[in-house]
Length: 184
Image (cartoon, rainbow, N blue to C red; front, side, top):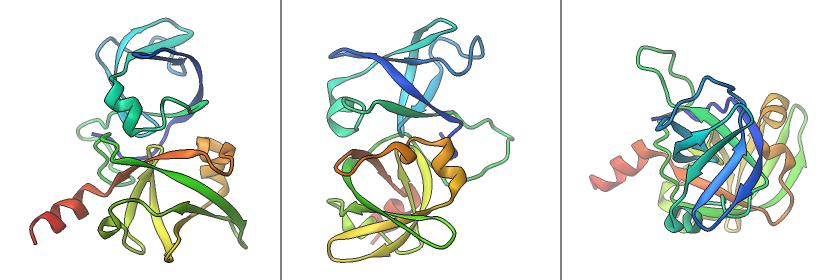
């Protein structure tokens, strides 16, 4: 389980039909089998050196996420039991990808607009959402898009700051919201 509070973002070094190799930001503080959130997808470390981390990736994961095309990957290690809980409950089970449409400068940050996802019932103004593994709050919702508002810190420490118009973004709906709607 993750919280959506990204530790850093790194460059993809190599990608094959069944694997992903990224820069290693943790040095020796990683182990085989460890779960890492990679742009929101929970992946298991299959091997590593001080310079890189390797993951086996299923074709389903490449289809459902943006990992097949992303140049930069947001990284978060799994939540520690007894640790501080920040962000929101993030499982690392990406539901779909959406398209980054544009950004608009605001007084104290930037508004990022995204295409509407398939399951609009999970998009709630001021509700939680996970984009590329980042816990965010939904801002505005229109008939064409929804937005999130980002502070400079988020732009500096995640890969959202390098997004280009048309880039695909991995989305995980708020799990608690999904549970509540499933009960109806």
